[in-house]
Image (cartoon, rainbow, N blue to C red):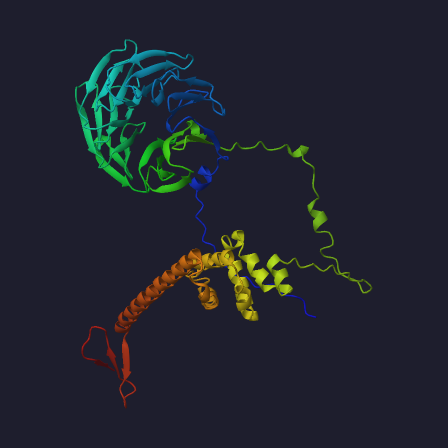
Length: 523
């Protein structure tokens, strides 16, 4: 009896993603740590000094987390209503936050009660930031005003009322303590100078502005709003350099890597896009489970912290390079000579060859095919992990069943659930050029067998309709491609040079070019 030959599974080339340095760099993070907060996480701010704690603003509290802690090491809860925009000062000793009641509060990170309160806004304050000289702070409110405060005396220094809608984002310049930027729902980004009483640059973003970010050099400004991320040249008076549209929903926050060579944007579409600041092209993307409201990068890009609408704080830490073990402490393995021993041995006349046949390990579907259980073999390759990840195996077994003439028997006698799985596989792969020749035959057999049960199950009926629409679209595509192919054949035919030999004269030929109306005789 001949030995069983396993079913032939065709190998298809896999078009994987190109692995770049950015792919390796941004994938080098551990599995995320998730912390449940009391409400949607609206802001995350890292302390600029070691040990790089970060403040998480959610609901009516601001939690301070350590670098690797999963529990808050300090909590500021002296807010009567929702807190916003907890931001550290450059020395890491003070923290400022706005609130829904319109009061700006200043905290000592080592204390609990507010050191100062700044009253003047009439509506919620959702923007707070320290100036680079550490003696003043700015606040932006839903009352359309931006105010500059003196920290020590709690007095209002300036008030700008140029925006015509809610102010929801802002930042200060690292180089000039008098410059700061605000973005508003009136679609504008304005640059203010504390030395004069009006804005110096106004940029039209075209969408409600959710976030603004100034580069450390002060020469570039990035604004985010709607589905757009726009880059502006500050040295040219706010000229637009690039407009990026890579998100499917509103972009909510921006962040810059430590080197300044990568720009990160997060959106309600649950994605974080990473751009190169030299080409402004997406070099990598990160996916999350819910819509993203806030994003922050730890110093040296050691951790990525994301706050989401489902009140979850997601932290990904960079993997540490494990120290190389001492070679002397390792157990010494066999030497090279051990493995090549006997390689050049020449058998002698009286030597006896002892063979050690390798036993063939069959897959589950091959074992079932070997025992002629064709229906169970088809069920084995229609399991989710096979039909989704490796559809070529499922198609290969169907092809083997068709070769044996038992495909119809394997497809028959299926209940609603089994038939639904089979139809789902056909809908997903029937128009794939790799599997079309096999699956078209399978689809015809399925329709012939189960046409009598149409109308008994709404799920199966909907899948049959999807399969019908899919095949009709594919036929339309094929017809359009044939028309295009015919047009191309016509074009190529008019471009070819015709050579006609004149009877009776072997040394003379008539050559007609594509642009010549009359043939030209050539000797």
